[in-house]
Structure formats: C-alpha cells, structure tokens
Image 1 (cartoon, protein in one colour):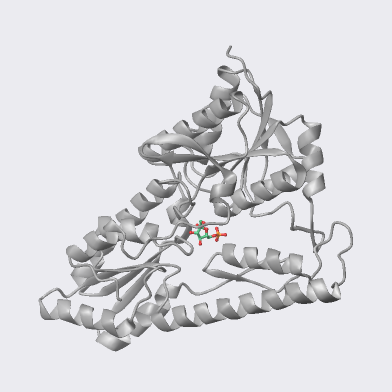
Image 2 (cartoon, rainbow, N blue to C red):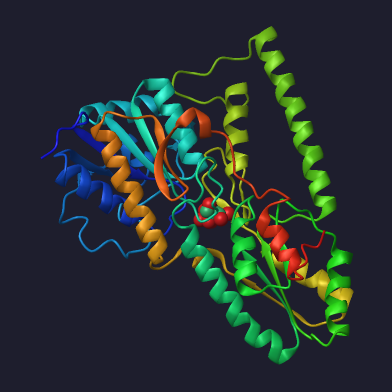
Length: 415
Ligand code: F6P
C-alpha cells in the first residue's frame, strides 16, 4: 500500500445527473482504497446529504458493476449549503455540513458537479476551511478551465442519433423539424450534435438569430430541391430581440444590485437572524442572482419562499417551429430531447475520461492536494486551482473553429 496524506474522503454528486458519475465514483473509490488505503465515504443527494448526515461507506462491493450505469448511485440534488430550503425557509446550513464532515473525519470533500457545484464547494471551503476538490461533470460542457466535462460526449451521441432519426420523417414528409437540445446557456451540445447530425440550421445562445433570415435560408433550400430541413436549437438560443432585451435586463439588474449594496452600507439594512438568509438583503440578492444564473431554461420557479418548485414551460422549440411554419408555409414539427440526453449508459469516451479523472483525484489526495478542480487538458488530467475556474462559464466563441467549419459546409446559424 502506498502512503497517503489524506486518510478519509467524502464524495458527493450535485446538480443534474450525468452519464459518467458512477464511473468516477468507482474509480476514486478503487484507487483511493486499493492503492492508498484511504477510507471512502459516499454522501447521498449532494450537499443536502451532508447537512442531513446521510453518509455511507463505499468499498469494492458498492462500486462493483457501476461503470456502465447512468445516473448516480449516490443520488443528487441542486441544494447549496449556504442557502438551502429547510422547513419552508432558506437557511445557511454551512455549519451543519461542516460539523458532519468533521464528525466523519472527512479530510477532503470531493464534489462531482458543474459550475454551480464548484462555486458551492469553493464557498464552503472559503467559509469553513473544509478542504474540497471538484471534478467537472455536465452534459453542457460549460465548465471553465477544462477542455471537456464528463457526460458531454454521451449527450452529444444521443442528440446526434436523434437528429439522424429525425431525418427519416423530415425527408419522407418534406417537413421542417425543429429539434431542441439541452445545454443551459451554452451552445456546445447543439453545435456538436448539429454538425455530427448534419442539421441544416444550428441555433446557439451565443449567436442570436434572426427569424426572417432562417426562413429565407429554408426557402432557398427548397428552391434548390431540398424539401426538408432540420433545425437543431439549443434550449438557451435567443433571437436578436430577445438577446437585446436580456442584455438590457441584466444591465438593469446590475444597477439595482449596486444600489442595494449602497443602501446596505449607508443604511445598514436589517441584519438576518443567525442561520437565515434574509428575503431582501444584499446577501440574498447575491444568492438569487446565482440561482437565476443556474436556473434551468425550460422551467421557471414559483415564487415560493423555499424556491423549491418548478413550473414546467413549453419547449422554446415549439415557438420557433410555429413562427417558421408561418413564415415559410412549410409544415413543421418539434422534438424536444430533454432528459433523454442525460440518460442511459455513458459512451466509451466518457467512461475512460471518468476513470482517468477519478484516478487523478485519488492521486492528488494522496499527495495532500486539495481545493483544486481536476481538469482535462490536451489529453491529460491536471489540477487547476479552484479560484481560477469558479464563477466563470465556458461559452462557444463566435469565431470558434467548429462554427467556422459548419458555415463552410453550408450550415446556417440564423445570424
Ligand atoms: O445542466 C444540465 C442540464 O441538463 C441543462 O442542460 C438543463 O438546462 C438543465 O440541466 C435541466 O435541469 P433539470 O434536470 O433540473 O430539469
């Protein structure tokens, strides 16, 4: 057995489930236990399980047979330690989370999640001194500082296969088919699946579209004898008008936040009771902002004070299809892939990436390294300090080589 500076680690999975999570849990457990003799604990349902002390021991038997399993054997949640719905109120549960980690003698909390999870882990470390490590998981591929996140490749494959299948109906019925893919506010998934599936139009959040231009492009295709078209649209895609309105709203929000900050320092707004996040103070403004940024796009939350419920909304692709049908006179249909993209077995690439990342995490822990994200760069796993990645989002640059390449093969971005 090799020596290790870390004796016990806790693993949690937070945010949306993603293919590859179990492969990482398996890999960390096998390497940390088998090579370094560390104790490995699994925390259920993300940060909530830590707060509620739902923690179990992981060993060879628990992680056996999970390499190919989708979802997460630990369960997940979108809860944040510093602002968690508890009995109808939002509470700062950092102390409870840290107490439980200490009780179990956890030297480092390994958090598998996306940008939001990294932010929450970083905050926990900053507030309490509890060591953390993050591994980038998301089908959106928007985690900053890593070339790719695990789960993305699987989602791209699923979305691509869906677009392949949609071609059958589109060509047979000479229709427009609008296929909505996930990705939150990033267009990576739509870009990759759109190119791989040969979509005729790809719409990304980063490149606001013009409806008339898309309609003209589709009609031009028809004039050239192509009577069907596939439009791959990212759930966060915006028209030019919407993008302008969003930018104006953001600027307004920023102004209001500054104003709130000023009022807080000059008039000293009501202080929160211990452990409670106040409904109107700047601290909550920050929480609400972060929450807004993390909000899934196909849902909006009820203004319940726990902010725990979602109202399901119509896929944005339906609206787009309606408009395009009206503008072109061509029959349109909609497919919204939704959570199908996160389901099922991970691809070979995601299994390999997850195994590499998990093994690297265990090695870093054995050296006593913490407060880093395990990133994948140029084919290798490397540690990156958390402060370099937290609070940033990796978006598709307008001049990205894949955007250029798609344009070269005749794909329209509607811009
Ligand atoms: O972040 C992953 C993701 O699947 C996004 O692509 C999507 O916007 C969101 O999660 C959906 O969240 P939920 O599972 O809460 O509906």
